[in-house]
Each structure stands twice: as structure tokens, then as C-alpha cells.
Image (cartoon, rainbow, N blue to C red; front, side, top):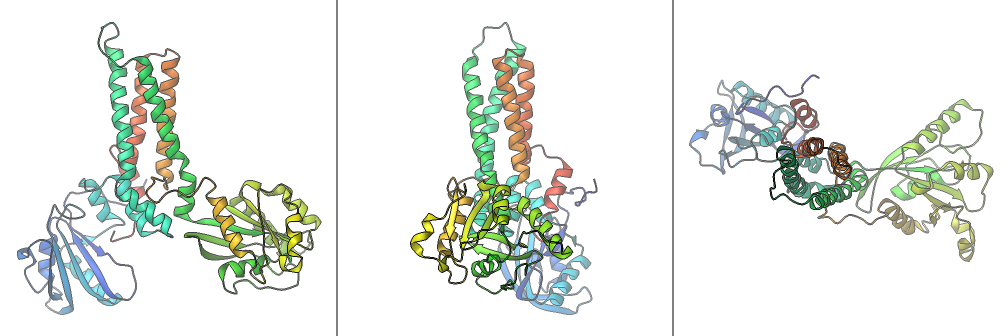
Length: 461
């Protein structure tokens, strides 16, 4: 594998723009490392090394040739009381692209090197300021698409997941010691925990791991967003419903069947969540090649979708609707009876559910039932209830895979002990579980894993 990060060198001085790219009122150029104060002193109009830690100073950033670049505020933070654990200087300059670029290039001329993606967070991890799960939470917080994702990232950054993992590790370490004592002193009459207690402890750990793993489905859709697709026959009002949900005229609406021939996508914020809303081509038999391709893409989208709104015309249920009903996964589909303004309200409850658990009656034209649809979407997504904002929720596939690996190893320990397998083999599986848990917080993580993780971070973070 080609490493994104060069081999870690303690104290190496790096610099990057820490604010978002683009023009703005203020930009921050961050310098960090053993020679951060020295680099800053070379380009600042005053001696940075003489400043007390965590103080702010006004002055000028100069090129090495003595030309003024910008009037700035400079913040000095001495190690170890910094985010990274190393000396850090932040220069607050005017936020124009060219000004920021020129200030950053001045730091390079003075001896800093360009920071790689997430390299400040990597320094914080390597210097013991955060564990790996907390470091990942930083990027999750920065990239949060909604309030739920932001809250769960903050909980992880505060160490809630790490504390759970450490609790599992401590208990497993105790069990490993007992298992290995059984191996080393099989004939000795020593005071170890009874066999039944060890098995019960392992089952309790397995149960807690399962609960944590079960949060991944909700955590994933909260963190990554939800693919929500509008599906149905032509001319049932899918495009009108898309426009109603978005609150704008995004899709072309026409009485002519087959108007939508390709996927139309847009972002939707609903109930504090982020959705990728997709209006699909109406499914029917056709010999027209472009429409056929649109229908093929619709079927692919159905497979990928987290949630499907199956839109049906309340006045015109045709053969293709029935065929679609048989093919759609009912557990993630909401049956939406559209154009409900065209029939008597008291007749709506008489419409069949056709085996769908989730059904609403709406009118995309008059917006009747739209609030009911919002609530139904929330209900389907959070079938077991929305996680509490302080709950530990797994949002990373990497964490889930490590938890599943730990769970599988623990179940092998339990199975082995209950079938009289040698304690030596049980101890080996218990150590494998410890290894998997260590991958989450970084106690035994390899350089290629670190490279893969931090390469996803922003430069300057």
C-alpha cells in the first residue's frame, strides 16, 4: 500500500490552512511542531518565542525578504497544553485566497513543511492527547450533515465509546489471566474465579457488544444520510411529491406519462436528518430505448435505497402497480396513496394496504397529508425509536467490523469452555478479542490503518 502519511517523526514542524477554503473575513494558518515558535518568529514582526503561552498578539506577517504580507493576530500555545501536545502557533489573517496562500507559503519558506490530511489530529493521537476513536470523531464532527450526526460525534469525541471499549478490555484481560493460569497451573489448588462465573462474564460482554453493534444501522444512516427514492408507475405524481417535499420546483411536472426518464436527485433536510431524495423514472412496459434505460436505473436505485416511497394514484391502480408491489421490499417501503384530494376523505381508510405496514394518504398538489408522511418517514427510519443524543452509537464501519470480530472471538471462547476445549485455545481466542477491541481505540493499530483513517481527514485538521 502507498502510505498517504510519511513515517511519523515526533516534533516535525508542519503548517496548513485550518479554515475552509474560499474567500472569507478571516482565515487561520496553523503551525505545529518542535520548531513552530522559531518558524513563526522568522515571519512575524515580533519575537514569538518570548510570548507567554495562550496569548494573542497583533503584528505583521513578513516574507523572508522583509516585504509585508498582512496585518494579523497571532496566537501562541506552548506544549504540552495544546491539541497536538506540541508547540502550536495560529495566525489569523484576512480570509482572501491569495492572502492566505501567501501567508502559508511564508511558513514553508521559514522551515515548516505542508501538513498532510488529518496530520494535526495524527499528532494528537501519536502524542496521547486523543485515542483513535476520538480522533475519528473529530472528522465526523466536521463532516456532520445533521444535528443527530453532530451530537453522536460529540459523544464519541468526549470518549464515551472509548470508555466502553476500555471496560470490555479490562474485563477480558482479567479473564485472559484466569484462563492462562488454568493452563500454567492445572493441578494447583489456587483461588481462581469459578468456571460458571467466567462464562457468565463472557456472556455479559457478548451481550453488551451485540447491543453496540445493533446501533450501527441507525448510526450509519444518521452519519452518512439516507437514500430516499420515489418509485411508481408513470403519471402517479412522483415528481409533484418530490417538489412538495423539497418545497421548490425541482422536477418537471406534466400530465404526459414518462416525463421523468432519468434519475433526478436533490438534498433534503427533514426531521433533523439528511436525505438524498431521488425521483425515478416511472416503471412500465416500453420499447423506447431512453425510457428503458431510465427504468433500468430505477430498479438499481430501488436496491440501493434505504427508504422507498411507493407512490400510487388513488384513482387509478393499474397492472404495473400490482407488479411493483410484489417486487418492493415491504420492510423499507411506505405505500403513498397520492391525489387523495380527488376522493372523499371518508373513503380513504377503505383503501387496501396490500400488505404494506407503512401507509399514508397525501395530495402532492394541495400538500394534504404531507405532515403525516414526514412522521411516517421518521417512524420507519427509527423503528426502535430515535437514539438518545447521549447514547453511544456506532457510525463507523471500521468500528463495527472490530466489534463483530471481538464478539465472534468471545463466542468461540464461550463455546470452547462449555465443550471442554483446552483453556489454552480459549485464552488464544480471548486475546484475539482484545486485539480487535484495541483496533478501535488504537492501542495496537498498524501504520497502514492509520494512513487509511487519517487520509479521509481535511488538511489542516
